[in-house]
Image 1: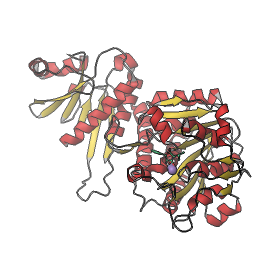
Image 2 (image 1 turned 90 degrees about the vertical axis):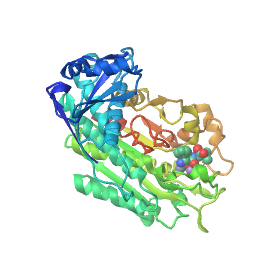
Image 3 (image 1 turned 60 degrees about the vertical axis):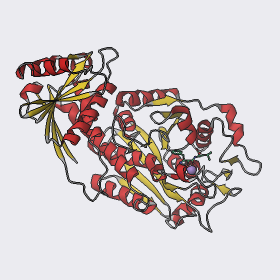
Image 4 (image 1 turned 135 degrees about the horizontal axis):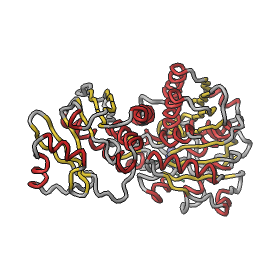
Length: 480
Ligand code: BES
Ligand code: MN
Ligand code: ZN
């Protein structure tokens, strides 16, 4: 898919495009819609009157106007107008444009009067890009599609910023959508090296011997059952005079069978995306290359597969982490926190001002928040606030959950310092508490098990990986 997006000075009526899209708010044409209606001698208002189209949010109607199509997009009512609604409207337009196979589309800058031209164009542009995403590299019939969008009376500068964030998101989606026979730990590390080479990041990739030399016994235990050896990836974006230094740690399980605590088939489905945290970190780096904020960023990924073989780790094993703490394995399916324990300790060696982990960590977070909202845990209110603000600005839904200290005792083992699983209740909290054992403050953790992968087409994209987290992390790093 090749999308180009321009902002035009003119109104929808004056811009090129086989498809022109205007909004319907509370059952009435918007101002831009009325202007277009006049240009087509009242065709649109007639069509509105003749049909039952009420302009409910997301409703779409096509009207033939001579050579052109006019799309009437329901935007709901004027109440509670938000950038989120505009972003979703943009994605809806992209979906319809693809369905129609048009090459050039002019779109009203929805709710520009309410949100301001900049904010409106930014959200619309993001939606158009995100909604255009398709993962079709394994479809024999896929043909390259080119679409050019014009945002009427839009703002070019923010459109460019939206492109950077959306392309970084698409890149993360691509990585998490790759099948596990292609995106092995070695392939993920090779991709990180390629990305570093392309953009001038520092990169270090460690194999099993070096990982062992660092004392990463937990990470190695998880990786042991797979024929594909693990890789530890360390990327650095180092601007000239950084105002702060942060580390991003992404869970990089290229496939999670559960190990001997084997997942049932249905739960194993889509576990190729158990490296979505790692993908979000790589996506973030891709955006850093273009935005160049004055923040030093370390990206750490412990890439492995959780599989079964004669040598695979089993429950009751005790492993020694890089931090020196020992962990009793109570469940081989709680592998993410074991790999992250070592990756977090490694990141801590850089003594960053903040560490943020992002991981498809627990089914428990999905039970709590569903498939659209991620869980945030933080040892520091300011860090939590900054991440929540970034997520909100980008329409990535994030909800803070407590690091309830009294649950810490559930993780105490009879034979080791910790065990990797406590009780079932409050599982996401216990997982976050486990991670916090391996870092100094300030630390934040995003459990993206819910939103990382969508089983069906959704507001901002098709079924598959969502790229969740990229936009939040980039917005956070690029602010202040
Ligand atoms: N990768 C899974 C978590 C997950 C679940 C991601 C659903 C995406 C969708 C993780 O490794 C896992 O298996 N967690 C276990 C932990 C349990 C054994 C304590 C879980 O949540 O069931
Ligand atoms: Mn697991
Ligand atoms: Zn997992």
